Image 1 (cartoon, helix red, strand yellow):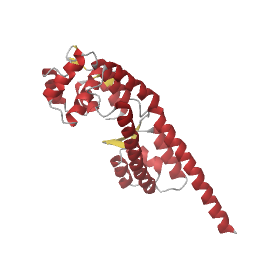
Image 2 (cartoon, one colour):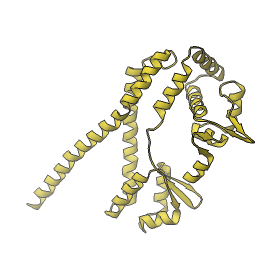
Image 3 (cartoon, one colour):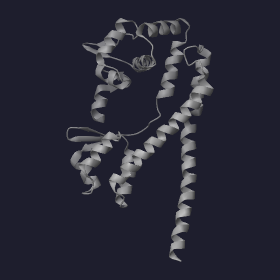
Amino acid sequence: MDSQGEQDGRAGGRYRREDVARAAGVKVRNLRYYQERGLLPPPRREGRVAWYSDDHLTRLRLINDLLGRGYTVNGISELLDAWERGGGLSQLLGLERAMTRDWVQEVPVTMTLAELRALFGPTATAEDTRRAAELGYVRIDGDRVTHLSGRLLEATLTLVRQGVPLAEILDAADFVQTQAAALADRFVGLFRRHVIGPDGLERLSAGQLDHVSEAVFALRPVAGEVVASEFARAMERRVAAEVAELLRAEQ
C-alpha cells in the first residue's frame, strides 16, 4: 500500500480494523479475541465502520510485547487489571508511546517502477530493486514503488550521479544497518539496566513510570547526537589520511 492508501485507512489517529492490526503487528482476528477477553476496549463505531484510536494501537503493541516475552493471555489480563487498579496503566501506555514513537521521521516517496528506473538510469537493475526491498528501503505494490525515506533516496541518487554503482551503495547500506542495529542494542541495554532497572516495568509505581518517561524524552536525542558526532570525527580522520596518501603518491 502506498502512502495515499495508508492515509485513506487512517487519519488523525483513527484506524480501520485492518490498519490498526497491521500497525501493531497482530492478526485481524486477534482484535475481537482481545476485546472478548477484556484486554482491548471496543472501537468507536460510525455506522458500519469500526474506528480504533492511538490508544488502541498502543495497548495492542503492549499486549504483543508481553506475549512475546512469554506472558499468557490470562497473565496479561491480570497484569493490566493490576495496573488499572493501581492507576499506573495510563502512565504505562504513555510510556510506551514515548518510547516507541517519533524515532523515525521520514517522508515516503511513491512513484511508478518506470519512474524509479528513469531516476537511476540504465545501470540500475531489477536485482537492485529486489535487494532494496529486502533491506526495507522500498515497498513494491504492483507497478508502484514507495521509497520509505525521501532523504535516503536523495542521498542514494547523489552517490549514483557521482559514479558509485547502486549495487555497491546497497552493500554499504547493508553494512550500515548491521552496525546501526548493534549501536541500538548497546544504547537500549544501557537504558534498560540503568534507567528502568532489573525488575522491568511490571513492578514500577506510577511515579517511577513517570520518571522513566521523562528520561526517555531527555535521552532520546542523545543516541543520534553521539553517533553523528563520532561519525563526523571518524570521517575527518579517514579523509585526512586518504588525502595525505594521495599527496604522497603524487610526489
